[in-house]
Length: 269
Image 1 (tube, rainbow, N blue to C red):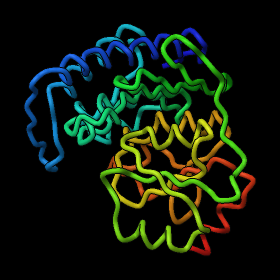
Image 2: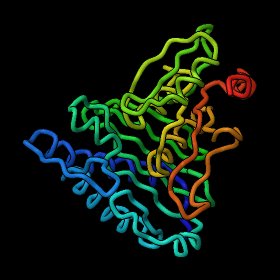
Image 3: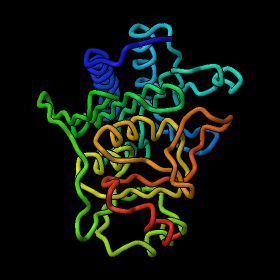
């Protein structure tokens, strides 16, 4: 299951994410219906159309690398545990935002190698912006056809935190109360990771539930832009495919790794 990380591979995954985004927009612009999955989360035809596009595209691009997708997540851990490298996909991250028609949803595609995200693409179809990264290649933001390198920023005197638009809980409020005075902005989907990666925010704390396909692509983008994604409370890097459950622990996304966030977070906890 060997594949070389390269600009050509990253470009191919960017193109695939955009194709999936086109399928999502076909539904977004229609009178779509919403059903409920077993966990009561929303599901639309856009999720399924994007999943099919990505699964078919990745099978052609790297036929020897398995795929784990939110809309095809029935692979038992006994099988997954044998994978050293695989694609981890959320065909439509932020279905609640999709249903609200606020544009804050994304296509997430990540390549996992030995439990770490080594390539990631996050595409926001309505905003027509792509965040992409790979180990050794850095992080990029693509606005239409314009490409620009992307880096986290030195933490501002008054930090900017980004929090979930649809998922906030008492644990998050308690954590925020123990951290320095800050400004807060809400975003949906993996766009929260991307605000930190692009230097528009300093910290993204998450205490509510997420799955591994929600975070992998964004984590790669953040790390390649100079930041870190650390699980709570250990403050060690978030890792993938280490257990039967695909649910993540709480985590924090840090832009400026020299700012001393771990010490501040331990004090806040």
